Length: 388
Picture 1: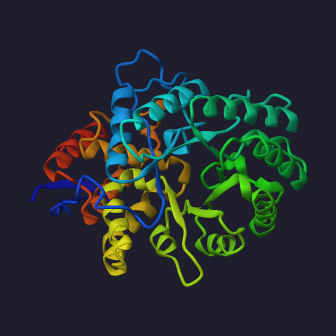
Picture 2 (picture 1 turned 135 degrees about the horizontal axis):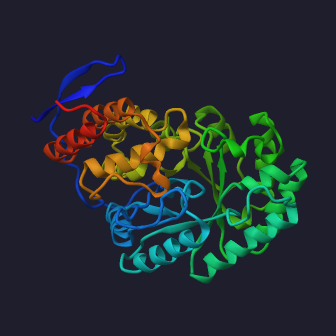
């Protein structure tokens, strides 16, 4: 197998020999017993003349190819979410165009699922915003997405976190929006480890008190809610919340640290999935979910188990920079031709971090062509002053 010299956390270089890839199928083995969405990344246009810090330039063909791959593997697409750098390079007009193109592309894949991020990110940061402004912003995006035939993921709002003065004001916003939606939505509670601007969401800094508010809002609007995606990286709180949800309301795990355990579930229930890491480990996720559907729980864990250390590394603090790892792995695997990101976010992780990502991806059998991965890793290392 190919070998490569990689830097380590101790600052030293060491030889690393790659392993044979696992050879996962490139299509779903059959229907799943869990609903599973991958929050998909966008591929930047490396030849755009836009400066990446001030504009969004997307390679639409490569981006949509990534969505088609996910659908073939039986995964749904959670579109224009934080994984697509929403709020970290991808603006609302570009997000809406992405949603439109993804919905159109899904029509060529019978049964393909697409849910799309609805937020308030077109509001100008720093303005003196009110709760009424937040409601209007949510309504604006919801109308635009539903006008394209899309279903909504109601994303947590930075603007609401900034202007709300009580838990009741959160309830007012969500009650108002949910009373208008055409189809049941997914609510997204994103923790401040993913976005520091969302600290104190639901009107409380303490997570248990915040959860009380969220559960109350969800359960009184249960007829309009398909499920809730919780991204707190706290499996015990997710399980506790899952058991409190009204009948028919799904828990979509957003826990990229303990997703395997949460999806497998326990005697009291399980979580479905809406995960950024599924963008990177899609072949393994598809194979594992197929095994679970066949009742082979041991195979499910045998497949997903080695991906958990990779995911914990990709989503390590500062968690909000996880997108860099997802795009880097896509490049290593030949799923895109370059390592350039919207907003210039390819610079958000260190060379040591990305070298460890390489090792962990190899350990999970997720370097589909180790020779290509080594060649691209060497090219990257040269740009970092490591030429061996």
